[in-house]
Length: 286
Length: 331
Image 1 (cartoon, chains in turn purple, orange):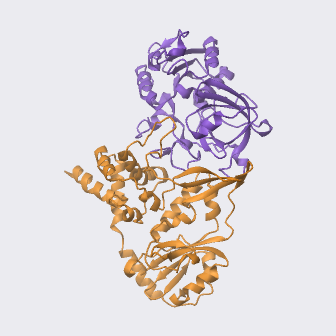
Image 2 (cartoon, rainbow over the protein chains, first blue to last red):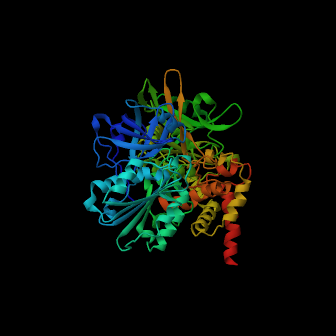
């Protein structure tokens, strides 16, 4: 498997020393998730590919692995969609424009763009999975001529939990994408919602898929994979045509701390993006 | 060949202390043998493998990643003096070679190599095991080797650094004794080596059922002693410590036997049961590492079997696996 040692930390004194970057914009995605737009010193490029992550560092709090939510085709900044779920992300949610955070990375194996080019792409994400998927979607949006039919499916628990609502609205309106979304259930704040209700798996059977040229990409919570994969296989896709991005708690991001192993693989180095046929036989992968 | 007489040991190492930061087998006041400095207690080369992992000299239980003062980050500094670490058995040298490879692969771990680079490694062998038992000759992989012939220490060198350290020692003509130790070392092949290979094959062939790991998991009390004693266990966690004038980010050993080891912020826990965690500990060494690194990463130092209060060190588990599942297949 390929590693991607093109990383901003090369300019620092140690693999584990983060590089400061400035928060240039913060917006609320949901009551529990925020989008941070960040700028490296001198506006330098992060050098990432869609699917990679960075280790966010807050002095006094620690580090957390966060997927990059923006495409490298958008110059001058990068974005992180951050759910408040622990001490580092809770502290990060207190930060405002002008504050700085540390980052290390980008790390991990990204989506194999060279193998996705020319294909019809079925981009399926659930919950927070839209954060890394957004990087790929934006990439496809900016290099639209490189890809075939682009279908986006997104499922959230509720309307209030739906991430990147403005992006979803734009993708739904775009002639370049076929975009469908659903919510598991309608709760108090979703009274104006008139879209699909139910699990994301219900969005797959109606699709017309040309199995000879389609690749499906899945990013979502662990519980989602098995059921989505089952539906995709019913449509005729094989494990060699399905890409998954797996969630693990990478503490170091560089294959040393041991917290993200999946049998002999290190999710932070060999993943987080895998072809399904690389991991489906491994215990605990899905 | 050089020789170090027992009565010269303190002076020899004291002289080295001016050039190196010494880590040697010493006897603490409570009777524990450990790897420490000359100030920690009298030198105790005799006694076999030290109970703690000797690789801790380069990957300590807790060590700084960096210090931040008023927001400015200062990486951990280089080792002031080169380390001289003695007390490695042949099995420990294999462990060190493995973790050197691990920390160098891909992203080179600069924190580890700040300690490791330039360090002098001294092995111990000969009749210096518990009760004078034979520790097999090492024969390389270190800078120098102290071989106990029952009375004194023959000193074999394998590098320029080792030769320099031994240069001032007197010569001896002990080829015959050394030859005898070499012969005995060859015949002292550990039957554990074959056992661990067979257990590895069972795991890799997926012939160990989940019910076995449930049984072993039930015996685990999550004391983490196995991980803390294992020279090839390299998992670590990261913690920030806040002080009045600075923040220190440090890393410390972690254990895959703890429930929180892989638990994610979302609550998802790929190692959410003792059965899965116990399987992970053994599978990692005997199946995952052979797949990734081409070799089993347990070198049978025996420490986990010694420290485990419930008898599920790796050798004990391997023995049980082989007893139960090779037989089942034969039947």
